[in-house]
Image 1 (cartoon, rainbow, N blue to C red):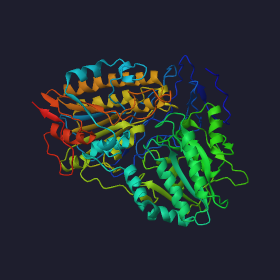
Image 2: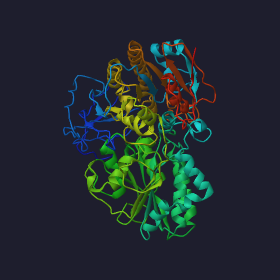
Image 3: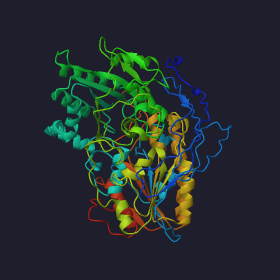
Length: 638
């Protein structure tokens, strides 16, 4: 393997560690754990984490398996109410330390010690594939005595988690947002991907008043189009980005600057060249030889920086400073004459698409396409969780506390393609659809208590996604959020926070405090996305150990659970066509196991889907399902 090149970026006050072939690991853990208690009326939990780390590092993943890890010295902690000091990390530990303290979003629910809990255990990214290639399928390669026993001894089946089964186009891989929404809604929901696609086909997209208003307000100034440039269709779709550029051109905009966030995760790690070339071709065709039309790619940046969702504000700042031209407090901005040349430079630095460092495209004899006063921004991502942080940096004004912004452009407009958060004050082109009587709301009407528990990487999944887009907790609902470990990439800590989640989960099960428990384990998705096979195997084995404890606790108190997944991922770790690691989701069906002491069977068919999960849970509780549910129970009692 070639020797990794020395980093060309200028790093200020950083602690950088290279992982070696011997798989040495650094104990990297930000001191960010604490406990905050807020009421159910809060619009969004305040994660106890320093928004301004005093030491930062930037990570560039390399083909030679060199990894850089971030060490953040976060000595200042913010909490909305009560703060518990973080636990001390054992300096002798080799692996990253997982925080032990969690954030609790409390509600008005009253505890009871007589409940027999019904749990939904979601193994994020755990698809089903009988592929015997043990260098590809991390589930089969792992030692999973608990999973093997559950699959053998309890009622089981396979259900759909992709394509039309969850409201996506035929052949479209599933994703976490869609999967959790289908499970919580008890019906197949028409996804934003399809809504926008349909409007483009009918022409309604080009007259969307929110989009056209943003373009018109920037008359004489620039229209900036942000978006993940990818065909993965998890967060965005390249066809939507092309359509937005066309809309701006049709309305007479003379300056259209595209800021391309590169994927390499929902698509192969080095696939950006084709997407960038298609984008350049689109811009060229819209210019139609008119040199007065300044249509171009203004910058490129890996999604690792542009689309962080776990309050790693140093990464978000890297992108914000690239877009606005502010003084870079973290890394130097690279410059290139074209986007394709910028990508080539990144590959020469051994960066894959996801980790491409911020690169400004400086076209000859043209000013840089930075965001300036009077400009409009349209963010073309439709999935909310990874669009929130960079959006808040532009629209939150003086309320923003993520990092110090050197420049604060006075924008003509900032438009979100979909609703990213109820508290974000920006116009939305495609507002969220109402999802009445989802499982959480129905349980509230029945005065049932419910727990939602996950680590912060998957906070939105068990809260707003599972609740049909609703941010606030229902009456009787409690949310426990365990901080995700602060590592550069999760192959460095494949256990993530699963053991801490399990500790809390076992505790509340044994106390019999809740009627219903919704739990997400993030490992098999987040580690699967890294493409590192050995780490993926460790992630599976960690989950297997956690399942053993959770099932034992449920059996002890007479509880039951469904174990399933929101989509596939970790069962496929190699891309046979490209030869690259497979880092994306899959179209695989997902397993469903019903762990119970009752005699029953799972009656899943080829038509069964994640939309059947909520009806099944109500059947397990001997409760009728509301008329809004379109799914059906997959359990039959004998």
